[in-house]
Length: 402
Image 1 (spheres, rainbow, N blue to C red):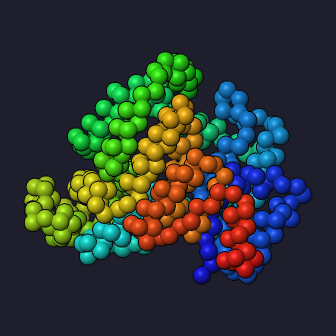
Image 2: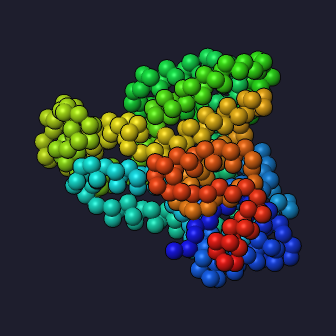
Image 3: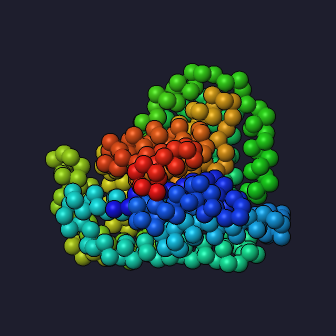
């Protein structure tokens, strides 16, 4: 089997800037040789596509402006396509999480997952959409989707807003995070509603005010953050699964076609690891309700999210740990994480899918190596994190015969 390689966006951007062609560089020649021999295959992800999409200058209305940055965007997209031979696109983060959830549930409660066929079809559609968008970026220099740009910018700025609030009042913010983790309760409210109602300029103004009012760093906050990291990650992994499930199975019918909650009810003690009855709403449901009531299905799954995030699925716990680790590292340097931390976390998901992850970001590499240890131990995937071109060259020469 070929070794699966994954490059973060900075690595691909550096390759794209090589003149005249990245294939003529030392690393390029080794990659071409190893790929031709079938020793390696390079994979891209939807996060690559979105970051490539954002490689442009935008006006106040989030419209693309015609600058040289668009030439770089085209070259990055082409470099991705050349590296993956226009065919190897990983699924989105949510599909990776939900596949693990489906397989774990099916193992614990045989028959609780009717079939993986619908999931497999949706996943392939997801991969094809992003591969098509990458090809469009390579072929059409002036691609402009202001509504999508606005959503992506809002996601990044909202993330930075939360980090700035943490920087302004770290003790209070940490209190709130720990309290939420300990008093876990399911909510279907839109927790981003108030933020989404505000303009981007208003959010930026609050970020600047928060950063201007940052107190002097108290090392005890970092120690407390590190002490509670696992507890926080265990609880915050549950809503992560819920968000992912809603993104994958967007219609109630999809849930009904995929899950059999009567089998979940039958295997309840095995799932929860104790001789306890299922909740009353599930215990009293008829077979017809179990097969036709989408709300009943989702209420049942909501309970399973916490069980699986705490005890069954490592991935939803690993990403909150990465975020908290980045917060601690940034605080030590009296900084706050960049607005791209959310993108970095989704890149990190690919640690579970590939053999080698290459990055040139030192702080990100530190966090990735921590997560890679857990991925190797808990998910039996001994992925390697490489941090410079010399390490990559040695890997391609010694282990791939390039």
